[in-house]
Length: 213
Image (cartoon, rainbow, N blue to C red):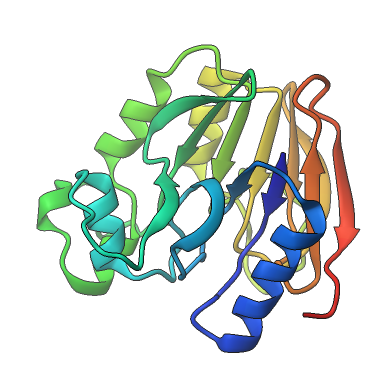
């Protein structure tokens, strides 16, 4: 299956790179790690919302109210799990904000809808038999180069509870590989740099340069 990092596909050049990755991989299904920002997709794509999205679309996807012809093959993972080619895939949508975390989701308005809340984390921790976990926030110990301390304690908690084999993380626009407990953690490149293929049988992840659109 295809694995994609941040796309930021409201930008026309970024959108061309997104579709170039779909074409190059020629897979029937995709996983995406947030900041997708374009939802009319060529194959079924399971994704978590990032901190940059159309949050009206994200809300509609959360509540099963999508009627727009601009949304196709986009399936949001928001503290739930699906079986994809024999792999149990789950995800936590959004990023962390301490001022919003203890609010009910219905209280988040406007751009604040980008965040996850405590109820989202608790629901994710109740999932079972997860093989691959998607997140836009990284767990602690992730060796990305940022000018702040990287790591979200609530992603840590989810990984400790679920113990997935693989955690795929967006947001940082950088490929790194590390571990958190027994979970392999990979932060993925943005789509305009690389795309990945994941072997459902072995969970082996292979990185490919995204061709010039």
